[in-house]
Image (tube, rainbow, N blue to C red; front, side):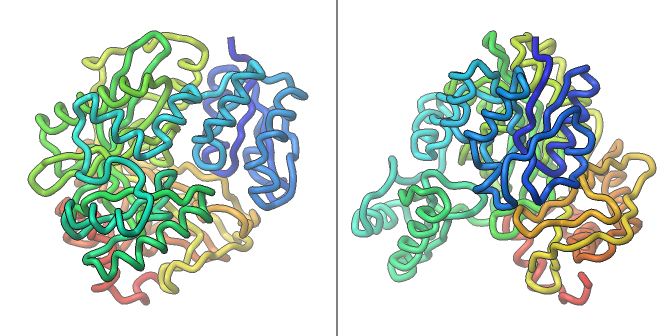
Length: 454
């Protein structure tokens, strides 16, 4: 039985894991950088160990120091959260070899689905549609141009080891392809240490839809429905909701079955997400699998009533899923706004600093997942996410009304945040009508004056 868990992360997800463990009666060990000594998860965990300097490379990405802390504190398991080492197959292997439970999939599944080209081929064999593209990495510009012409422009160039929009470029013709191909390779090399890229047809104005998967170690795989993640800026998600306003019951059934087949093909275990692009006609294509808990997992939790962090821990403990696909119901609508320490009026410039007044919203149908407080210093070394506002209700209309109301009373002073941006989106007719695609954000910013976000 898992008695103590090391949390190999920081910020809101680390605090979220602490809270789940406390409810399960499991002890927690927080590891932290020198910049995070005052972070809430450090203060609320049962134990805490500093693992290095402020930069991620000196702390949260140091697998050796995290494993050493786990051995010193005699923990049973490590929860990696999202980001950092969460999808690092080598780290999962190290945990396995040290007899420490990695709360996530087996290292072989991470490796399989982490290589985007291999992942595409794996799900194809399970009869899951993929976007037309190259069969694997393309080795030269000449070969890539030939494939691009065969696929048909526009095409998207993607890093094999990519994520978060890095190493991803769009080309509309041979001339732009030459430039974007080399830019994508350079970005991929710098970001992931792997400059390989592959090609896909660029589907214009799709929905970005992901399905939440749970799989135990006894062979059962189920899905918990979809999340619509179409509102993005530079491939970074800003707003997620469930269920998708675009969906029909028939499309949900078809895509849910496809998502389960993809997870089964990867011999998957624990929580994961199958991501799709859906065109305006309802045709859907697998794009990747995220082998970890997602930032937006709270949306699914509020819609289904299932605690995903607790389920992750139970699965890692060897427990069987105590639900079947037919037991999963969707009783509410939920919308999540990612609150980032950025200034949307200044091209989303980062805004680290000290928080003065902090007043989070409350009331019916409002959930805040955040690690910040008055006097907290947001360090400049990490991702700008400082919290998530999740609003829910019996219908999408109720959830939207609550989101707008909650954003209106959400006060964070001393830094700039994306709260005004989210409030403007919640009042935008196109978003209210449920018509946002992946092109929405760029168009919204074009027709909106920056002073609205001040």
